[in-house]
Length: 142
Image 1 (cartoon, helix red, strand yellow):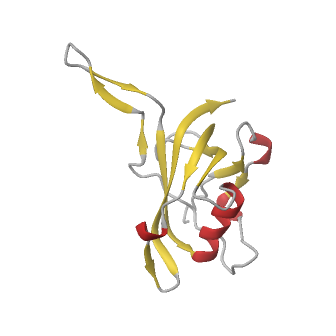
Image 2 (tube, one colour; image 1 turned 90 degrees about the vertical axis):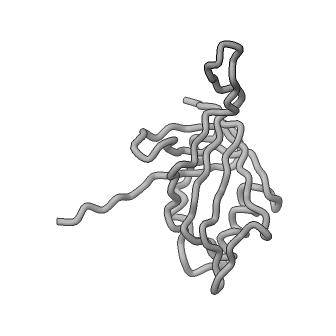
Image 3 (cartoon, one colour; image 1 turned 135 degrees about the vertical axis):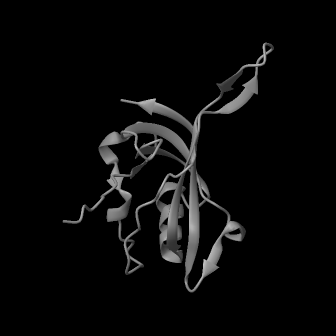
């Protein structure tokens, strides 16, 4: 018997929109023939900016950041992310359902999604390899 792993990473337009969350790997853009591959979050979470206190210990300030890494993405899928979640730009406010670590549980967050600039992509044979979507200013919601 082979165990199959189905991640449950979800996105919705705007903040506080848990009702609008859609599983990203179930999305098939109308201009494409392939659905999104599930992203991974390996080593993509930071708790905020680490600062050193006067006593030499460290603490984190600011907001958490998370990176979803898609092993590949088509150009049509990149445009779908831009047009759906970023109003045609490269950043947008979203509600995201994600895990912060590979073994963690899923939770909902308000965040700003930041897409990589085209010059930052590794474009090969009609797709973009290792596409990293960054979520900044993450705030947990219920």
